Image 1 (cartoon, rainbow, N blue to C red):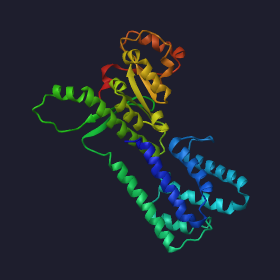
Image 2 (image 1 turned 90 degrees about the vertical axis):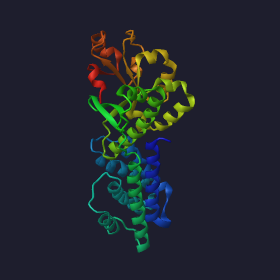
Image 3 (image 1 turned 30 degrees about the vertical axis):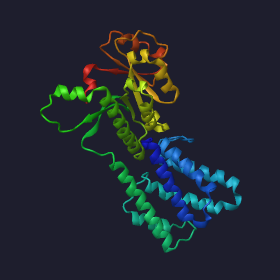
Image 4 (image 1 turned 120 degrees about the vertical axis):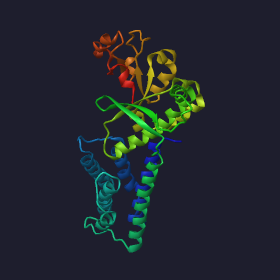
Length: 333
């Protein structure tokens, strides 16, 4: 499967294009519409703001007004048409979850009676738009339903401010013929661990997408990434494709233990160079070498390790975020 986040962006971009194709009809002009859609996607789904502010809806308003001004300069004879494109975008903010609304029929009636929009619509266009919007909302709901199941869920433990360790927890009813030891051993075997990591990435990607739709860009996640995958070229390509989106790369931190890093430096540095966010958990094999620690988004260290104080006292030299772990308790979900 390709990256869920990227697929959803394509789905939303396609809806926005069709929204304007219907409402602008024969006057539709891609070079006037696309700058609005591109800027919207950048801000709404990637938090790439050119103007300062904490309220994303206010930022969107300012950014889209800037698009208007930019287009005015290049299209002096189409200012009225550009104003219409801008006015129509305010309803996208409702449809796409930036603002709440009580009733879709009322929202669309308001759009068609909006005095700021000087375009004319017949009943056929109104019907076509209604169908498009309802289809978009239904498919969006169905998309998220695909990843709802009772057999697995994400265990979540907060490690620091807006930083969470994630694990996939199984909730299957297994036969009592199998001991807990046997079940645990099977669940953590190499192949099962790799496969559950892939499922974990997919479910976590939908969670991040839900966070963003709810206008929450603050949360970051850490997941253990099986080092065995680095020796399976075809399989790891599938995993990296599932992570191959700027937002997902920034939010999902793949975690390796220090021993794994020492033995697989080139593979892990390759992931870093490809833009994936990597977290390093220091273990008993750590040799107090600070040289590469700045490469990692987060450094995890258990307070019970004998070099814990040395690391904490060297934060300024390490130059990355250090997160303290409190014994075995942090590992349980």
